[in-house]
Image 1: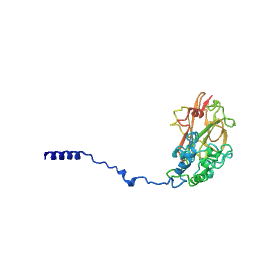
Image 2 (image 1 turned 90 degrees about the vertical axis):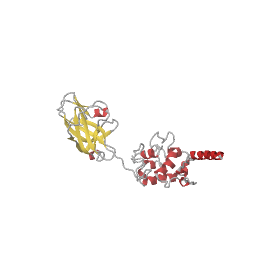
Image 3 (image 1 turned 135 degrees about the vertical axis):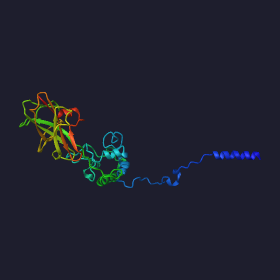
Image 4 (image 1 turned 90 degrees about the horizontal axis):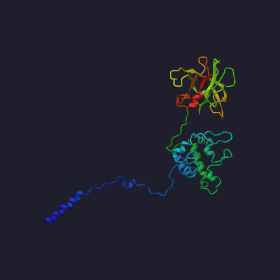
Length: 316
């Protein structure tokens, strides 16, 4: 009897010490992936996700090509979209027809689409280059379908992976140059080469200063605010007054900061330089507004010193 009681007590102790079974809710069969032989992962072959998976990654993101070596960058779906839509082009046709790699809603004006069809400049080849001279390349098996899917995506607005339509970017206005003239003269005053301070003879009472500004959407004479400040102290602009810039209908065309090109100078200010002495350096800033990004200061406090120096006068 004692032995039976002892055995019962041992069994009860073992049963009592057994841990509760942990149930994983994700083991439920209803949560298992659907087993299917279907290999089509995208309902819409013209969606950007499908284009990236079916075309850009296998065909374009090759080593030494669009794998980050140069744009467009097809390594990820994000980098692909961000280097295609509304992105400026590098190669153009002889007539400079195209502006963007992908112009939403207009495949005919999208250089990426056109480069799948023609050699736009006679030197760049037809994309993808790996298939152009290889008739056995797998691209040719579905070439027409792939090109049509790309065209459909562009003409439908070039939605991103989430189905959002893109918004045209708007860059802040950028400086192109600053030059000065003795009133009535047609040759700019000399400057420290190649793009340094402008030398102003001390016998002058006024100088006509011209500014070139570039905006990605507006002509320079369509910018607003159009003010100038000047100071003999690079760190003392905050309390200086604004002066109105004259905005010309017809610009002068001269070489600005970038020596290899000429630029249009729409903004002008006639500065009284009789107030300065020989050796004085006058720092200039202009302020313009593209009606999107707010008032932009050119040059800004964070500009490179050579740009700040370009916007200076030195009395000699």
